[in-house]
Length: 596
Image 1 (spheres, rainbow, N blue to C red):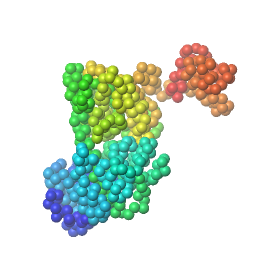
Image 2: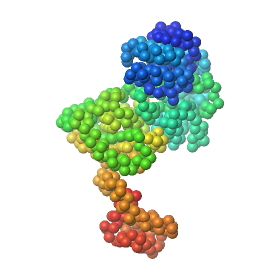
Image 3: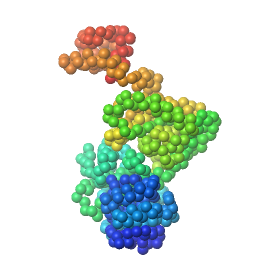
Image 4: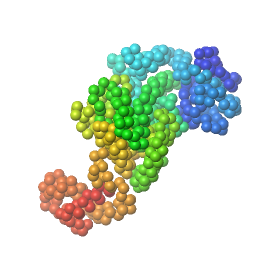
């Protein structure tokens, strides 16, 4: 369609502010963004819709328009809801770059313009997508008459013979075709691979669609589904956006087919934004409880808020639930050398002081749901909402049992569990509640790729508590567990409350130089001997301690004769000057192995 056709429809609320000579430009798609630099998501020919949240000062207009012009967009439409009238500096910048500029009246939603443009472009370029656009309204509804993204995916299957699925940033299945005869969805390990490839591509600035051959031998094409709730930093959205996976190789597709699939992602993005908006109540409940707990409110006041939260998060529950607290933190600018090393431990004191300052100020840093605040807290909030989704929950939105708030760089989840005496939670949680390692098992691979380079996610899980009295302690327990996780290597790490009652609690806070000297004194002689003689003294030592010094059990585990085992242990004692029959020496070896 041509740009000038937009002015012929009064219902779109568009008014031309400049660029009349350029109205014969062809519109190939539409994109809504408030990123200061959206270039990586532009392929040329788009009508860009913006609410102007990127504009902090007049000079920002020139930079933003220059990026759009370089990407070859067809035109720019600016909403009047944020600043009122479109600023003159933006009008002048568009004039200098010969970029047509429209204003959008406040009472017209960007979704209305998006639907109109997708409808027109699809009708002109590919009539086989017309049915998808005609059912756009049904995509926005729930219940028997709707069907959400499944409606679009079924039409792609029937009209274009394309099998497609919508995945979360971690590879969790959100939607797939439901019609009979649909292709089997990618297995879990392939979905994780696909999500990881998409996150890595976005972090590296590669333009889509991206192609990948999965472990199942199928070549997939990956199309990002961009959320309308964008920020200045791409890291705020990359880790939480959805992904359209098509079971076909798009490398040889004509441009019309690529436009068609981009139109589908725009339709599904509307559903993505609708689900984001539905989280507002749960986020607000979690924020209120968090602020009460942090500011030392009386337990009765906290309990009152919990009674309000319980029916929202667990509708139909007859008894008051137990609660667990999960704390997550996303840090940026973490180099490979600092990843899990001394940098994490050295940051504990600074982090603790910042958090105490936040509490003294009322714990309101970044407290408005979906509002401002450091990128780390908002990203951690989105990731926790994804990680804590119960894969076995029924209903159209499995995240309806999760309430996550954020304060500063930290996100805090309030997770309700039905009374533990009533049996296991239907999400596979046992009598001890959520387990830290199990939470990250399915998401570690894709998130590690999305964080690679400069990001890190650490997570801590508290024990379950049965009343408001225990919630403050649970919060501190989860925070302490997260600090233990932060001292470990890896881009994605977690620790649970079970580890706070053992040596694991102390080891992360031993200074690096002390750790190195202690482990080198005990283990370097054994490593050097193993290197020269392949004697496997280190594995023997680990097995001996793991068997509590039992000669017979250790020999059986290592498939050795007891005399061979005695010879190896004797060599360990000779090289180190220690006696493995003494408790003190056993303990030193145990700690050295754990710290190495």
